[in-house]
Each structure stands twice: as C-alpha cells, then as structure tokens.
Image (cartoon, rainbow, N blue to C red; front, side, top):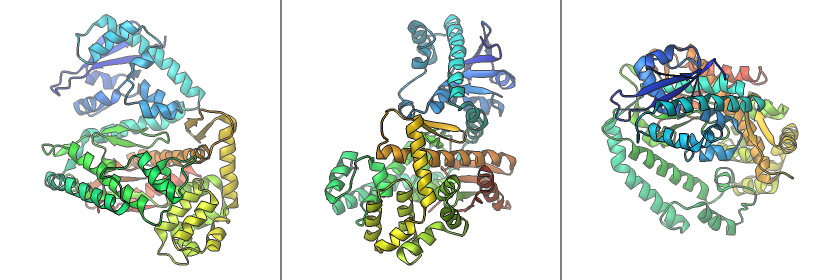
Length: 513
C-alpha cells in the first residue's frame, strides 16, 4: 500500500449552507478533516468527482489541495478510447471500483455519497482503501502508455488553474441576458423556418440521417466519413452546410441562454479540461463556448476592468507546417496569411479567403483529390490552378502517409506528450481512420500548445482568464494593460513548442459580434 497517498472522501452539501464533510483515509485510518486542513496537506490526494467539491474548497480557502488526482479523470483522459469520453456522463465511479472491491460496499457507498443514507465510517474506510488500490492500477496504466507526464505537467495544473477561474466566476449583464432570452425563441424559429423553406426539409433540426438522405442524391459521398466532417469541410455551392451550421449554432446558443437564470449576476461553469479525444477544454453548465457571437455580450468585465480576446492565427496550418516540415507550407505560413495566398493562387484574387481556408483544411484532413477539385471548381476556380496549388505539398503528403502508416502498425497515435488514440480494429485503415490519425496528431498538438499557453499566463498577475475557446482566450484586465503581452505569451509558446521551426502568431480578435 502506498503510504504517500491519502484518499479523499467527501459528502457534498447541495444546499450550499456549508455542511460539506471531508474525510481522509490513509494507512488504515479514516479521519474527518476540513477544507483548511486539506489544502495544507502535503500528501498526494486521491479522489473522484473532484469537480463537485473543488470550487467549494477554493471559495472557502482561496487555495486548492497541493497535489490531487481525480482517478476517473486520469483513467478517461489517458485511456485512448473515444468511447470513454462519450460515455463519461453516463458512468459513475462504481464501474471502476468494481475491479477492487465488492458490489455491496459500492452500493452502500453510493447511497452515502448521494445522501440517501447516513455516513458509515466502516464503508468509507473500505472505499478509501479501494481508491488507493485503484489509483495504483490507473497510474501504472497511464505510465505504460506514456501519459503520466502529460497528466502531471499539463492536465492537473490546467484543472487547478481553470477551477480557480470558474470559482471566481464571470460577471453577467442581466439586462442583456433578459433581452436575449426574450428574443432567442423568435431568432431560433425564424432561422429554422427559413432553413426549412429554403431546403424543403421538416421544421426541425435535421438528424444525421436526414442530412445524409438530403445530400447523398446530390452526389455527396458519406462512405468513410461522418456528417460533421462533410458539413465542416466539404464545400457546397448551395450553402446548405453553412446555413445548417448557423442554425445549429443558434440552437446551441438558445440552450445556453435558457440555462442561465435571470437571478444570477455571476456564473460559475464546470470545467472539463479533457472534453474530447484530442483534449479540448470545454465549459459546462453553462457551456459558454456554444454561445453565438451575437449573444456573447451577456459576459461583462468586473468594475474598472475590461475584456479582451487573444486568438492564435492560422493555428492548424502552422502546426501542420511544423509537424510535417514541408518547405512550401512553412514558407506560406511564415510569409503572411496562408489562406489569402491560397485564395490568390486558387481563385486569382484574395477575396475568397473563407473558401480557400475550407478547401485547404479539406485537403489537409484527407478529402479525395477529385472531390477537392470539383468543390473548388464549384466555387469558381480553374481546375488546373487548384491542382497546381495542392500538388506543391509533396513533403506534407509523405508526412500524412507516415502518420497513417504509424497508426496502422502500432494501433495508436499520439502527440509528443501523450494524448493517444487507440485503434479498435485491425486490417487496412479506413478513410475515416486515415483522417482521424492526422486529426489526432494535429488537433491533439493544438490542445497541448493551447494549454501550455494558458499555463504560461500564470506569470502575468495582471490578467484573469475568463473563457478558453479551443485556440483563443477571453481574459480580463485593467484598462491600462498592454494586451500585446498576452499575444506575445501565446505566440512565444507556439514558437518554443516547435523549438523555433515556426514562429507562432497570435493577436487580438473579436469575441463579440
């Protein structure tokens, strides 16, 4: 048994009246403790569902435990299984505990945890022992998959950083919230009606099957791809994908607005620092990243402060250039706006930047060449110009092939610091698996660099992170603060990650409409 660890067992007081109970189990002894004692403890602390209690500890002490591991978060974030991410909301600690203790003990414990029965110290002692044993197994597995260093260096610190942020909360303009709440149903149903009429579809958000049934007869191929990929990357001359994505955005925004009560002037989202297989950060309850730009003005700065938004520029393209070492791609990224240049080469003008960006990402993530050329021609490009542009990236093509070959050979793909994805089948890679391999490496690296940038912001005491947005961050500062400092931290983080192979780019962007 590891004597350097303690198991934290807590009983949350959902009435918010300060009745939370904390217990520490170590070396066969269960001791009731306080939040103040907890944050002073030097042992590694093991627990589950830390998100439930971390904000309460922080609000009580303005500190968090020095070294704490949520073993379910560790298990899920280091397993490499997409299914673990997708099922996390439906699975509680019972499944993991079933490997190290009996079902009757687990049943009694969940009853105590959910406050449907009184505290039984004997049960808590058994669970404390089980948590320590379970942590040994999960940590060993994480180390076997080379995931432990990332958890210690990145995931655990970022969880602490953003827990502090969300515990302090984000100010809400209740007047703007009231206005948006009163208008959002009208906005949503108007957009839905327009979409339905334009594309002759039922008056509801179409399902994946509805989308496939609409697009397949028009020649769109869904073999080996999912609906999201087609909507995001496959150009459509009739704007179906663009209109549908806008409608979906309004629907998500409506859901967020409806979840924020007018009685609140401050919100405290729950942080999920590993919200996808590629390790993206998500906020939940409410999911602020789903707010459409026209509704984001419900978020306001605290008195005598202002909000700014820093965004990485041409982020994915820069990462692809650095990872692949393709000289053509490196030059395009270094010499200005890659997508403007692409627009000039493909369309013979720089006004088709959005279309050029979509075509480039479609190409980068594996769209078939014939479909790519057809799509570009649908936008008005000359076929030969499209071929000439994309045929330049010979080294990038070799790199993609090597990534896919590595995925096939080892049945897993990961970034330079863990965050691996496992393959759940054998044999030749499907087209979707080929795309997933490249996406895991590029998007996983993007998440890693972004988290490094957020952690580097800890050196700047004059700012407060408010909302991370995958490759950008909304932050609060005094009116006289030079936001170029944050832009430099972001760009330097990317430069340093790739050891100067590329020079990172970041600048102020628009968070609000």
